[in-house]
Structure formats: C-alpha cells, structure tokens
Image (cartoon, rainbow, N blue to C red; front, side):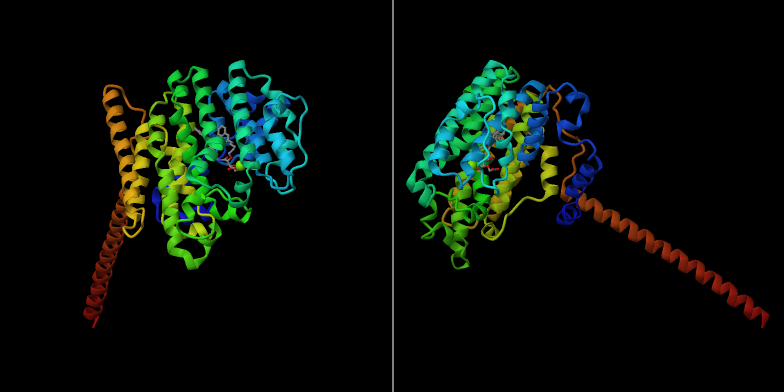
Length: 453
Ligand code: D61
Ligand code: MG
C-alpha cells in the first residue's frame, strides 16, 4: 500500500482511489467470503473458485461479479482453458506427450478422475492439474448449451496450440509472419472472445447478435493478448518464448534478443512502435463490441480488461524500459480505471485519454509515425461516432453514470493549490494580528513604564 501511494503521489485522484479501496477492503473480491451464498456449495465447486482466485490475477474478480448462472459457466470455461494453457506453457513436457494431451483435451475434460502430475516444479498453476477432477466434476452440472460452447472452444484451442507446438520453425525462431502472429493470438485469446460471446447470448442476457458478430469478439481477445505479448517481451525471452513476429523485428535487428541490447536502442524503440501499432488497430472493434453489451455486470466484466489493455499500451509506447524490466501500470491507476469503466461513455473517455497519451508520445522521426497517427485518428473517430450514437439514443433516458462528482487530477490539483493559498493566507493573517497584539501590549508596557519614570 505504501509503495502504491508513493507511486501515485502526483496523481491525487489515484490516491483517493487507493484510500477508498483500502477502506472497503473487508468486502473482498472473492465470492468465497460470502458464507451465506456458498453454504450449499459442494466441496468441488468451492475448490474450483479457490483455483480461479489462485490462477488469475486479472480475471478472478471480474468473473466473480457476474450473475450466478453465467458466473459458474465462465469460471469453468476459464479453468478448462487455464488447464490447457498450463500444458502448453510447460517446456519440460516431452513434445509428443504435450501434443497428445493438447489434441485430446476435449475428451480429457469429460474423463472422471483425470489429473496430471508431471508438470515441472516451477509451473505456476501445476496444482490445478493435480486436482483437475474437481473441474471435470463441476462441468457436469452446467447446462447442455454452455457445455457445448466450452467443449467446442477447448477442442479448437487444444488443436491450435498443438499445431504451434509441433511446428519446428516456430519452436526454433518463434512466430514468423504477422499472419502467424494473428493466428496464434486467435487460438489462445480470440477463441476465448468467441466462446464468451456465445455464452453471453446463450444466457439470454445479451442479444444473439453479440454471439454472431465473430470479428468483434475475436478482436476483444487479440487486443488483450497482444498488449500482454508486447509487455512480456523480456520475461518470455528469458523463458525462450518468442511471440514477436519475425516479419516485424527482422526489419530492425538480426535477432529478437538484440532488441534488448543498448547498442540497438533506437531500433528497439521503433520496433516497439510497430508492435503497438499492430495492437492498436484492434481498438475500434473493441469499442464497438462494448457498445453492444446491455447487461451491466457483463459490461464491467468485458470493459475492465480492455481499459487496462489500452492503458498498458500507452505506458509501453516509446518506453525503452520494456527491454529492461516488467513495465506495469500503477496500482492507483488500475483502481481508478476499474471504478470508472462501468458504462460506454466512460470507457470512450478512457480510450480517448490514452489515445491522446500515445499521440503526444508519437515521434515524427519514427518510421511508423504516420501509420500510428492514422490508427489513433481511427480510434478517436470510433469514440466520436459511438458517443454521438449513444447520446442520441439515450437523450431521454437517465444515463448510468458512476458518479456525477467526478473530479480529474488537474481540477483536484487546482483545488489543492487554492486550499494551500487560503491556509497560508490565513496563517499569515493570524501572524499579522498576533504581531499587532504584541506591539499593542509592548506599547502599553512602555507607556506605563515611562509614566512610572
Ligand atoms: C471479454 C472479457 C474477457 C476476455 C475477452 C472478452 C476475450 C478474450 C479474453 C478475455 C482472453 C484474453 C487472454 C489474455 C491473457 N492471456 C493469457 O491468459 C494467455 O493464455 C491464453 C490461453 C488461456 C486463456 C485462458 C483465459 C483467459 C481469460 C479468460 C478465460 C480464459 C475465460 C474466461 C474469461 C477470461 C497467457 O497466459 C499466461 C499465464 O499463464 O498467465 C499465455 O500463455 O500466453
Ligand atoms: Mg500459453
């Protein structure tokens, strides 16, 4: 907490968000603290939610805020795919074994008692696979439609991951073309977007249109995954994972690892711009997708990861530190974004804000300067169009604003300065009055003493 407060020292609204968060801490983000609710739950269901909280920093809280029925489906969907990813990510599993598991994931998740104890000791989510029977057990309780959606996505993702794991060139040099990069991201994240949209529509909480518009759902996943891949350059390289496509980095350096070499600093920054440009092109689709969401809880669930992704891209852009350490957004900034991302107008505001941060950082000597300007212009255009549409649609309805009293950092700062002026003025004034009083009495004293004489 102290570190987060210091980090946000120059951002008063973040300080407020941090203090509010700590004040309300007792109302934990985990559903497991709601003892009344979980009183009737089976041991395996409780264990599933424990695993959700253990394996996801970013999605656990938002998933648990969903409506009961959808929440269980999305939680299990997450655990099914996290299990699969724990097989994919582990470089200690022999390739034949890995591929056979990935390709049969659809059968595995309906095999009572199946578990896996052969993950390397450092695999962060290995315990999930050790106790995987709890997930398999709970899947049985979902309704048929949800199950079919989850199984279908699991099958496609498992096969997609297996294709990449067996691709010799991919293993040696990493992702090759931009098309391969898009396809890999489709398998690991675009498919999640497709599955989630189908679940939303199947629940009846969203229109069938949300599930039908596949391009928008895929972009939702790609935008998140690409922001992560850019941010995790160093970490992935250390683990010998290469997701930045060769088609891009080869325009700047001879090997992906050269980017972190200070000797190639200028090239590294330019390459980073090119990667950010590629991710930014998905942003307009994400805004359109979010503008189609009707249910408040689904909206928060979808919007929070997206605003974090645009904030991440803004902090990564033109930032050489990407090649030296793990660059992250401040905790206070995260909390502020979570509080604000509750309706489309606020989300548009957030996207506009970070797009402007990117425009300000854009460098005219960068080879991608023009393309980045255009991409940012397109985001601003989407913001404008969606805002106009939304406002004219709901001009009679009352808008669901988080808080009418929403001060920005700049306004708060001015208020703070004014307050400071008033207090100093007051103190100085007091001082003058005090001096007057002292003078007055000393005069009286001098007068009386002179009379005495
Ligand atoms: C709306 C709301 C959330 C969305 C969405 C739309 C569209 C897509 C996504 C979430 C998925 C975005 C994934 C971005 C984070 N990347 C990873 O976790 C990588 O693994 C990908 C394969 C497993 C996907 C698991 C997943 C993630 C989020 C979900 C979900 C399933 C199900 C429901 C809700 C959210 C990354 O993992 C690193 C790690 O081990 O943590 C990797 O290996 O590349
Ligand atoms: Mg993975």
